[in-house]
Image: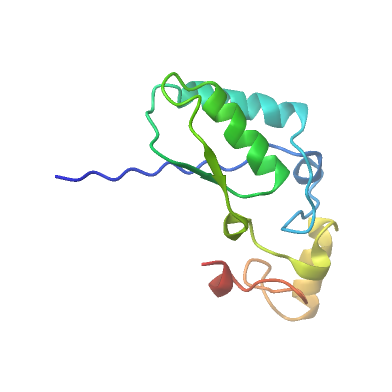
Length: 129
């Protein structure tokens, strides 16, 4: 019998997502103090999980989260984290670095709902999948 397990952790808080500013792929904002506490808490929660591999986006906030989690792990502290740009969050194009309210306004002007709306230069939901 072969068992596969996958644990997915979203990165901790940044100043931008606290202030509801879109980061996407073009804004490489570090974790806030709260974000580091969240990453540490996730690390404590996952401290007894024996990971065989760790993959992370190459953006700073994701790297910081993965490093903090692995640093709390009892079994895998020396495990290499593999960074991959393909694991970045959705690209929001011209809306990156702007308030979420701007994205909602762009979607409304286009006659679309926000989650499915794709701003110029952004990725569609299908492209993200």
